[in-house]
Image (cartoon, rainbow, N blue to C red; front, side, top):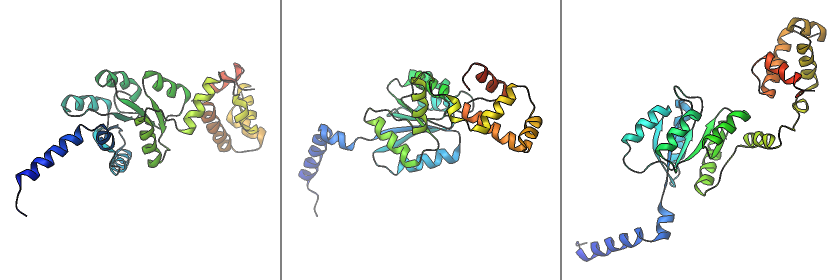
Length: 240
């Protein structure tokens, strides 16, 4: 087919018309996604899955907040719309980095993607400026669903995270005792009485390793790190 200059003119006019058409823009604009994650396997898997979706384009992908901020200085085109941010990072933590990121990109939506599900960590991240909070237990499909919800102006919480928020809003009225097993309550009472793991094992006719296993699970349930914190909770009346 011979080249016809008029065809080129018509094509250019249609392109201009489309660019100025709000409906065209709404259906053809992509959301720019950035990721800060130090685990290469997770970083690669999440970024690869997101790249399969035409509605998203990947911008800055780094392993630390410091590298992300440095990349922003070099990123002269479209800034990220949404950031998937880990908490446990080398150097500055994700939560510590939120104010610095928002200072550079005030309109960015930050989705925490992390293993931390403790109430105080969740609240600190949200109060610092994160709009959503995802557990790393979430599937890749759930991560994309969360991004879509945020794009539409919403906020997303993993079910386990939402439960922690509900507990906080209830003012801690959910008793820790109700989620401890009978054996765990028995063990915490003996710890408060000052008994050693060995003594508790003999009194309950089990091995020390069994006692250690019960205590480890109990610490996780109570969101404490050691015996002193568990005993303190008991003495404050939080475990009956």
